[in-house]
Image (cartoon, rainbow, N blue to C red; front, top):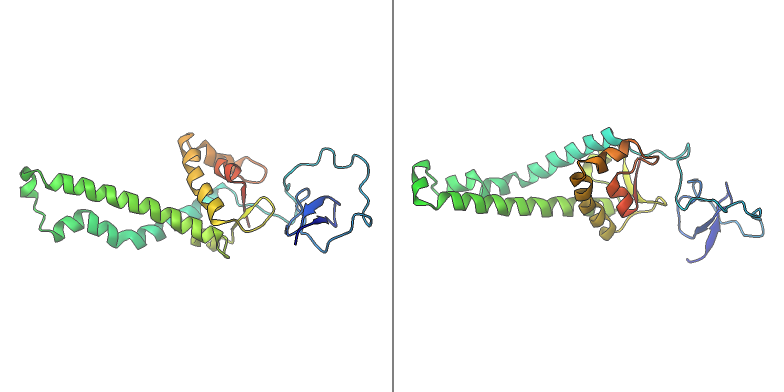
Length: 205
């Protein structure tokens, strides 16, 4: 349903369907007609376009998100372990690998190719896992779910697979900036990393 709803707390106009007010972050209740809540002249001239921190909204900080990342990394590694064995030294052993055969020139290329294939599989697996889980009804990876976290857009709504994908790969930018993009989580008002700002997302608790 399209239209405008007015916040019961501050009177700010919001797009229909928002769960939280775009001005004060309060939970949106039943719509209030414009005539029922007249807006004082100039009252919202300096209103911010995004929700701000309120007592009812909590955001996940750096360390708890780091712990969730560790849990997710362990889960993905455990699932991919058989694949790693197939393309790594385990796979070489299954193919009759012998260290005395290094002189034949085939063992090392096989190892490098296997390592490269596994690295590509891991990149794809991490992307699919994170993007699918965060855009699902759970709105979180398993690691985030352990700590009661959810990834939302700036208005508290569920994000799409496309936005979750953008958020995942935006972490590359957070990393190549000497990890400053991740460290920002501990210092920004809504605990956003650089990748969160790029994707327009929040991590709530």
